[in-house]
Image (cartoon, rainbow, N blue to C red; front, side, top):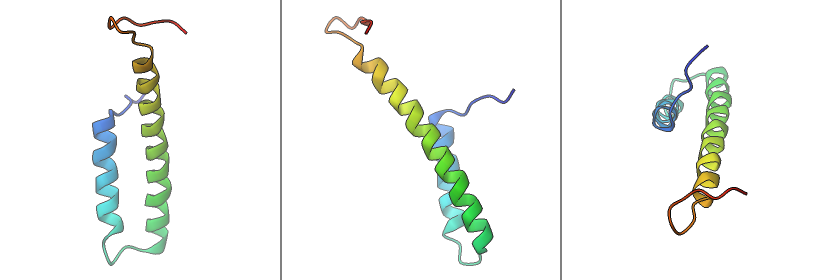
Length: 68
C-alpha cells in the first residue's frame, strides 16, 4: 500500500505540474492529463486541510480537545 503524501509533498508536486503546463512545447493531451491529475491532488489537499481545521475547531480555551 502506497504511503500517503504530506501536504508539503503535494504542493511540491503541484508546483512541478504548473511548471510543465507553462512549457510552450507541451501537447494538449499532456496538458489535460496534468490538469486532471492536479485537480485530484488539489481535492486531496483540501480534504486534508478541512480535517485539520475541524480538529483545530475542537480545541477549547484550555487547549484541550472537546468532543462534538
